[in-house]
Length: 427
Image 1 (cartoon, helix red, strand yellow):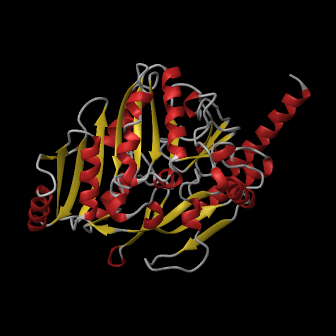
Image 2 (spheres, rainbow, N blue to C red; image 1 turned 180 degrees about the vertical axis):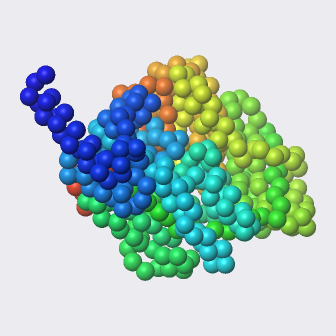
Image 3 (cartoon, rainbow, N blue to C red; image 1 turned 135 degrees about the horizontal axis):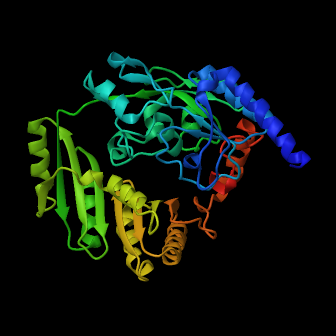
């Protein structure tokens, strides 16, 4: 063994001793192949039990020049670029408590290792919910959902995660625990750190707790599905629903290959309210039927791509709401080379497309789709592909915002300790 390797081993040994001094030996272990992140295998996994322990671990890694990958439930660990380095997995599994449910104030404070499912169960005891339909809620954690900014169809009525979060505490690479926001819905004081950290893929700091505004659970729900002859009819119907006085909670378009597109509308109200809403929808769409699980379409596409990882890819895209039909109509020609496709698009213009086929053809389709989207002011982010896509950056073009994002990264994480290389432009 050469001198460099011996030195590295000594550094690793000293570092692990430091970890054990913070969290005890029980919560430090050697990483296995199952802990790899996009093919990059870390050395150590550590599970702090408090915010203070997490901050100390992060500071220790920063001082040692090691790369840290925060991990919650691991459901979206493959999103983003492969890490440039990955030495330490910082697990939030033990930070899993609902700290305070101020049900009278419609707020909740929760640690980031808590799963969405557990949080929703706690809120439901007081007839409330976090108005969020994230992927894999029984396993996805608060921290992972915030870091990836994962939201679904309910975003149309209740807003994105940046609208639902009102406070957060972050552990910064230098060991500082920084808090911003508060526990009241109308709090506007201070720098908006929660919104900055949301969607940053854990590259600025490790979120340790979050405060959310919550909403009452609906009395009853009803989903109606409208079959359309073509994309133009589907587009007209979606715009008509948006322009109407309907109080819908979600609105989406589903389509697969050459099959007829379907538009789904979700209503949440009392029984009398649902009857009035469905009657009004009938004046806009003559062909409709009731359905229960159509808003699981996004979940089904992601789960299908995961189960067929050798021949499937999935990407999130954005387009102008008035251009949804034109956007989807690109897919048949782009996927002509034996590639099958399915898509689910919300009325906000945010959607996902799942491809099935051989990797070279899928890669070509995704590249062309991204080029067309970006030329129209949209975007495409690859969330899963069968192999490392050598010619395709996961995030696409960072545009004019990239220099600002680099400056923010430099301010928060000057040593690039957190998730190096995983974010836009290799940040």
